[in-house]
Figure 1 (spheres, rainbow, N blue to C red):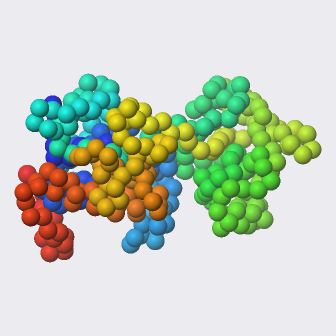
Figure 2: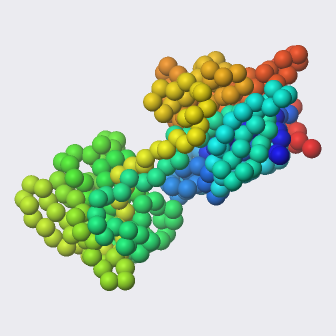
Figure 3: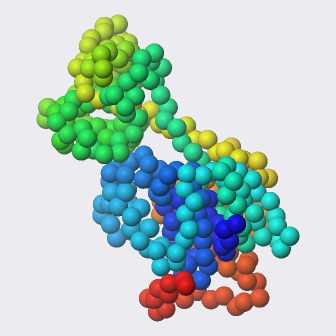
Length: 336
């Protein structure tokens, strides 16, 4: 059995920053995540994607942000239980929480913090008969390594921010980028829409609207796509090295939904004063938590992690007089 003061479920940015905030007030953390490495969506889905709204970093790659958060947590010696999913929750005889994973690992803690984003994600796939044949043979659902597409012909399908962001980013080094969207207008930000058309004017990208990919063609790997236009009913073939459908992600919350927590849809309702759920000693932070005026931003998760940690300290040590000490004054004191 692995014991700690706080058990964090989810190793995304909010969960990782919670390790630092808890460790800074001498609380030890264990962390469970179903993914094989820390970082959540930032590490698994878009590690090379630039992020622009982290204070002090005009631009930082998602993977680099995770590396920095892990380095920041190192003095507090968290234990990571990766590739395992939290399954059951129960109370121990000494009034602590017992969580068991799908692989039988048992963890005990005074406080449980759910920082699992919106659950486990799976990409939404287009309805194409040949799709599975070309997975990892020219069809990718996630851009993990942009350098992979250098000097290649790329077709991206989708009309949201992710599709446009990657079309813009990959156009810098790809041989060609074609963006296919089934509607006449995009759902992305105005700035991204303006930018992709600027790139098209420069000859580095092609935008095809009112159309969708209807067939994949190739022998040992993907070689061509059939693209159909809804307005003209015309079909044409497009030579490509990679097809990247970016239609969003489907979240699956998993067993946490059965733990007796109050939900609104798939979000956990919390008290915004301390991020505690309807069950004493169980908190939720990051995208999975909900309260009035909630903003689903990484920076919000950082603030929620901070509030949670100080509330958890009071919950674990109600007899102690807890005061906030600035890190600039006390420094970083590693846990032994």
